[in-house]
Amino acid sequence: MDKSRLHHPDPADLQRLLEERTADLQRVKAEYDNYRKRVRRDRMAVREIAVANVLRALLPVLDAVDRTCAHEPMTPGLKDITDTLAGQLGSLGLEVFGDRGDPFDPACHDAVTHHVSSDTDRLICTKILRPGYRLGPRLLRPANVEVTGPEPAARNPLAHDRAAPRFTMIDAGDGPRGCGA
Image (cartoon, rainbow, N blue to C red; front, side):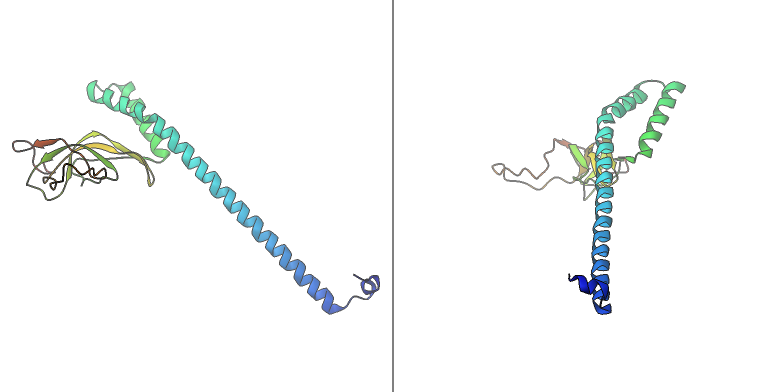
């Protein structure tokens, strides 16, 4: 820029320079705001992954506590441990799922056994062998269940359909019927 112009600046040039600098400043501010949002999202994602990993590592502990509660008398100490563990893990967002009578959903249930019954037109979870756990929408472990329902459609034994579930067939003629059993 010419030194003579600095002494007698043109108002139009000053206005143009001001608008350019203002636009530059707004662009830098927007980039910084986007950076802060991205860092916040990344931190939250890392936190969620870390919590999920810790909770997944504690699932065998929960299984051991559940087995102990099922086979031992409930003492005040055991009750306190169970309640505290459930409360603390619940505060982190851990959810237990898998109830008798739930419709079978292959996305969150692993069917271990299929009892054939003509009393129902869809697969129903009739026994929960091991509860499932999720953290918000994230599945940590599917529930292992026994299901009761209609006989699966016949398949070609030579075809290798890995997407179709494999069941052990048991006739439920004299056993429990449907989800109300």
